[in-house]
Image 1 (tube, rainbow, N blue to C red):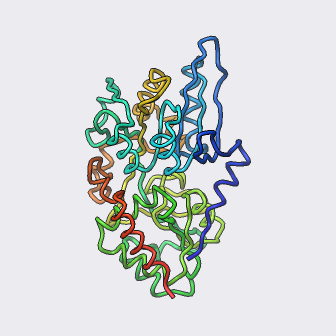
Image 2 (cartoon, rainbow, N blue to C red; image 1 turned 90 degrees about the vertical axis):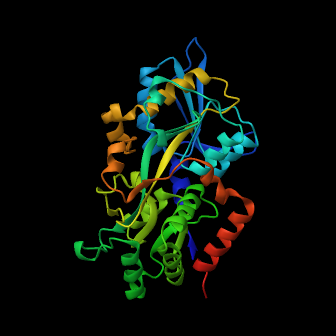
Image 3 (cartoon, rainbow, N blue to C red; image 1 turned 180 degrees about the horizontal axis):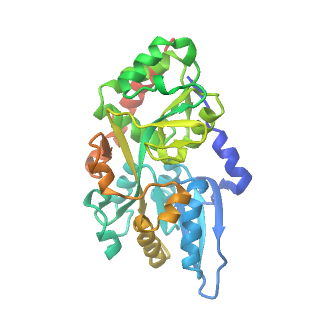
Length: 349
């Protein structure tokens, strides 16, 4: 089991300044959009979304709202949680891919309630208590190196993947990537959902462990290593970050939506209880939940907007549901037990 978590941070450092906020939580990058005008309006956002996918959205929103200066800060899912719940940092909007942690923030009283015609237009499964608002539906997919895989040996299910890895251990040893669920909130969410929804998950982890799987903090780093041939494949990667929907292909990689089950993460926005500028946060929430009406922005960002018809067309594609069930694996003892099982599956002699 190997670790490869630095690549994404290096790329972000080349673009913007990173560091530790005064409150004590770690950030990865920050970017400012627009210039503050006489109104003095600043919208402060903390988010887990990479700049390469979220920048087109913020550019478009700021162009429509030139009086609003946007301070966009990137942090990991766990650091975002800390910023809002422990440090009480003065952000106006929190955007995260970790649905369980966002649900906990709302459940524990750290979110404001908001309702508008735009949020009412969301499907019921894409909002929770008028405090969490989903604006993307992003599948967890298998990505394969185009150099390694022809059309004939692409696994269609987790069972196919297990059989392929077992049949060619020398080909895949040290060349499989997946999340380190101990450090990645999104990775932990996907792993716990897999464990609940498919019996193949633990057997797959054991096979990957025997083949010295590499562990990553981030989808972007896995995608790059698959594209450049360091990895032959990576499991549970965000399809949107591969520049593709489940049926499309990104540069250098093949994107595969496994037919037995596709867990779909809903990226959510939450307005913190102590937001200093909730009015402009409302504007951005309405903008985000209406992305399906802005195809040009969707095309530039690669983030799939909420679309009920996609889910109805394929019952293997399942959005993760909001609710108390998401909090089960955040219980300290359950988390400790899950991680113990996960580590024992991957760390084999």
